[in-house]
Image (cartoon, rainbow, N blue to C red; front, side, top):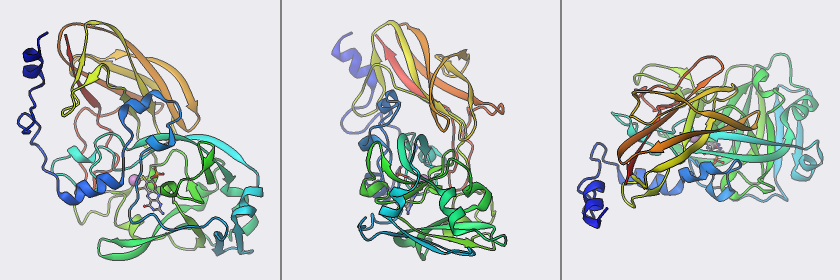
Length: 370
Ligand SMILES: Nc1nc2c(c(=O)[nH]1)N[C@H]1C(S)=C(S)[C@@H](COP(=O)(O)O)O[C@H]1N2
Ligand SMILES: [Mo]
């Protein structure tokens, strides 16, 4: 294949002609995208995402925090309000768990019309090994009262969103908060949390979209009414119009992603590879559910073939899959889709919602085989 052939096949040139014009992004979205990195999809090769490759989502600023003076206060409708230092928390029973986390807004950048927010394509994903203490033990010690229906988790980071000054706050029902796997985490991948991931303490709620795992956690309050803060009532809802209250976003929907094969074109990320038999691979996850099937299409979604399921990294972490492809010369569109144990399968058409939440559209990778 000559250089001229390649230039023709990859279309895009330095002036941007040949790039996709379906979306024009605002400078403010670009600024958000720089603050909140995604995991490069080749990172799907690691069972545990290296910390520096794990995606980030930070609504406001990363707050200054000092582990030596940090306190977690548990109060509200509890019989024994307590205040724990980081030393107190580290002395409690320790658990370590790999957990796959995805931002609820993953995939929203290609919606039309597009919700203007952090413009994720597909990279708002990662799996880390979190260490900490089970939340339940702490709640039992505080004695959550029978009139409490929810626990409100507050981070120390503050900002303005939707015209409302606020601390970052999310709630869980008492039942959801009491689940065995919910954790107060102080380590990620064997090291203290890095500032951007919630140092010194965060909540980890395995199986749920990331917004639930409150970072820089310093207060837990038991309350008698469902919490109606901004991050519960105004956003993280499956809304179809501005006045639709929408169902709350909760656990992660089934999804598979593939490591893009071959080598990328710098601008378009279209792939180039030689004709040969190759193994396509990646990861699949389904919130608290198991992944029962992964299928691959090498003809732009016309036909689907079974992939081989591989190692599951943990009960609340993604599992590996692989598929052998005999790549023949030409332009191809590869896709992958997963099915969960309840029979939910990823959609091939974009499911639109106002805020672009829970978008689990199948991935499509353009590959040129020479
Ligand atoms: N205090 C606080 N916690 C937070 C956030 C935040 O902005 N502030 N972002 C949430 C969102 S939307 C996501 S997707 C995850 C991202 O966690 P990570 O940056 O460690 O990957 O953190 C959640 N916890
Ligand atoms: Mo998120």
